[in-house]
Length: 225
Ligand code: ADP
Ligand code: MG
Image 1 (cartoon, rainbow, N blue to C red):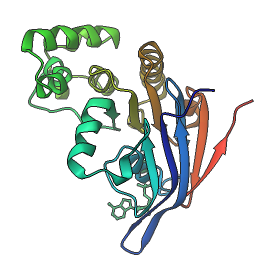
Image 2 (image 1 turned 90 degrees about the vertical axis):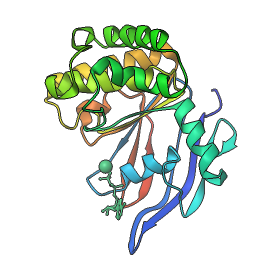
Image 3 (image 1 turned 120 degrees about the vertical axis):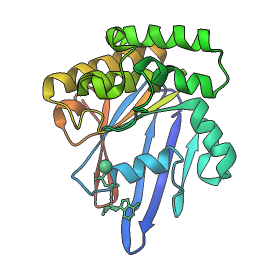
């Protein structure tokens, strides 16, 4: 077994009087797809945000590739997030004023990649996610499933080590949801990216290698046979 890439240990996080996480732990290895399951309000998104370094836990540690993310200052932590992590949310993540191609090219352009190179790579990823035909449309002009596949292309285009997906199929019907999951997991396996997949749908979690169940801010690890 290889060393885990990302490890969260005993993470505690409160929002005012609400203890969203009360000692949550999980890990993911390179290339592994881990589903984070649990009822609404159980702390799944908070756990994902803590693991991705978007919010700082009150206590506990998050370690990524041997570096303690939870002890890093904001600047280096967000720089690392941009270079090493990709994100897919339920909806609303694409910039409405940009075309789908420009949306996928955006993270590369922000990283200083030349327009021509970024556009070519964006086009390649749109094709890979089977949405090459919507390249010049704006997000408001494409279907929900197409939009999520554009979002997956954008999350993967920079070659992240970890993709964080929070209810990526939550706004889709089951056929479109499965299509997104099939393409997301196969692209991640091809590139070697790990995926942390938050979902409350067993049919979506079925695309994972392993499950972590969150209940009232606590985690339970489920090993598949
Ligand atoms: P899940 O993703 O499993 O539905 P969340 O992690 O979003 O659960 O929320 C866990 C708990 O923390 C809930 O009680 C929620 O209302 C609360 N919570 C989450 N984020 C915030 C926030 N920014 N401010 C206040 N309460 C929050
Ligand atoms: Mg959530």
